[in-house]
Length: 197
Image (tube, rainbow, N blue to C red; front, side, top):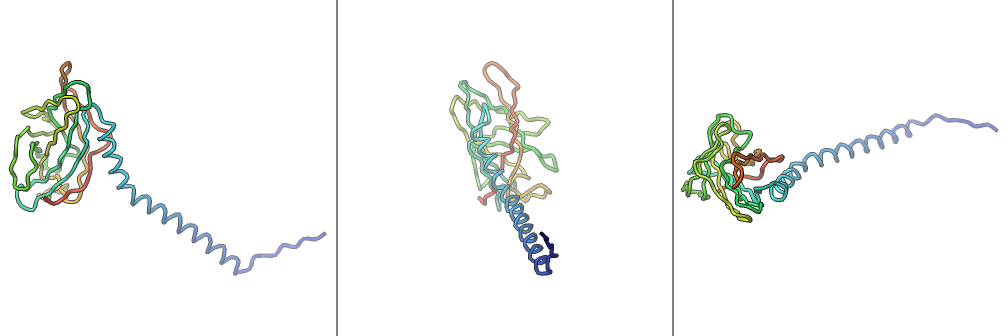
């Protein structure tokens, strides 16, 4: 009983090489597809986290705006909700990364393309996060707060300014009837698109 082994022909080598290359291209293509779509997943995950997992204050909605005229700063609107069983007093917010110029942002009750401010809650910096006015939210109460700064959905002369998207880690400063000086930093950033206003 004899067996003979024959060497592959050049055509067989070419076919094997072509199959390996096609498989490699498919793998690279799938990797690029998933890496490009991961930004959308991250934004969805961040918004879901803030709307369902943050506690005791949640951000049930977030939206960015930029202005072509007044004010020169951009704006992020946050809908903040008390999901605790007791009243909570919101005393300040900090966004990170903050900015490359170190300016503060101001918090207002009104969204305004004309620059009208509404009620002013105060300004925040990482070194001084607490506002001059505080907001008490009863259980299940929701309130919209508008944050304005040069680097938020803006083109106002700083390297980190952008009119496309915002992405910032948020720390909420608050107090309850029993405790003061509390803070909560989310494990995911707030993020979204900046829309013209």
